[in-house]
Length: 152
Image (cartoon, rainbow, N blue to C red; front, side, top):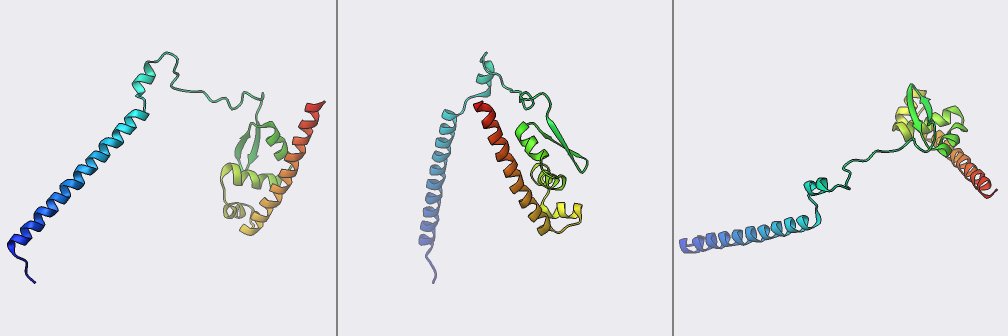
């Protein structure tokens, strides 16, 4: 079916009008979003001009104790600054402690740990779960010891 020239022109004008309306509404949305953003954000220049604002902060990881505990696992140092965590980890057998440190602190997966120790992934997974159970017992024991010393 062929459309007349007049009908095709009408469709073209209608499409142009539709596009203009869509663009106008999108511009309104963009202006509204910018206004919201402007209301919620503060200029960095304004913050820097204030006397009491310090633009940086210093982390104080090791201020709690004199010396952090360092565990050496496969030539990599793992620094633990929480005394209770370090004590609980040091009470574990060496292989279990190494599996936990490699997995949770260094970020190795079970397959990679298994390759390092010549074991399969499921064996390392089982060892890690057993080590976690033993670690929880040690952690709870230390928690109870601290509570006893606090009440004395």
